[in-house]
Length: 365
Image (cartoon, rainbow, N blue to C red; front, side):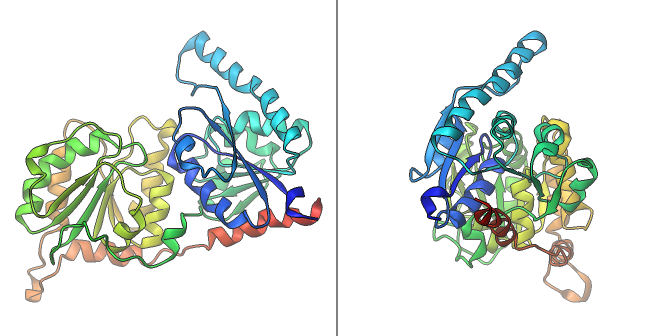
């Protein structure tokens, strides 16, 4: 059977946590599968998904309203299944791969109506609403973390881990634009959409960091908060966005970030210690649960975002970068312990496992 008859539909939308795992798998499958992609207009996948894939835009909104209007939004999402049915028929889709989020619900419904097999990947420790209620209708639910199985008793689950972008599977040199020097390097980032809360917290600590020869790469994302007073400091670099995240994480000493599922898996892959600031409005408080995975083994410290957070971050950084006075060693004792703890985590070859599962359907058509 030719590739043209192997038609895969990917449904992934919204944040990097949904889109990047799907992109990581797609790049490994394009030699065997003809790939189509369902996304939502005006979301970041419109710019991230390569033009070589057949991209279909759905005009639905994230369910954020209240009461009756929220009910109407959910209805619109469910009824978009009829539009997806048309796409599946036109493209002669033989398999669906989705990564959760509200776009997955109508896609799973459409696929089941047409008896098309569905594989769902859940990257968070606490499964999202769609995974929790629609996972049982999927042929397989792939888990980023094995403990997620506790919440999915009626689903056919496989622990695969979460696939990362190709750049994380090769060694990368530090970008040339990073501040030069021998001091420790911190990467501060707020996820795919940036984070004002983390940016505000950092500015309280910058004087301490820069005065102690600690280099800082500050990735703002979509945040509009920019304090130009530090832009000319030699150990400080502020940027809006970079595609060299793997390079930065592989070569840094500490990461300060939100705790989305992708970030947790990138930290595990690069074995880097971190200070994690869970997004306070994440559904089911899943970012804090994600962060606990690393905090529980001593590889991360968690700071909850509140009015005192900027002072707590400063004190935490002072503790991490306190030189070990014992035996006159010029080392940061706490940081070294965190690094050692991160090296004890076992990792899965997620891309290989998921690729094998998806390609197993090639023989069924």
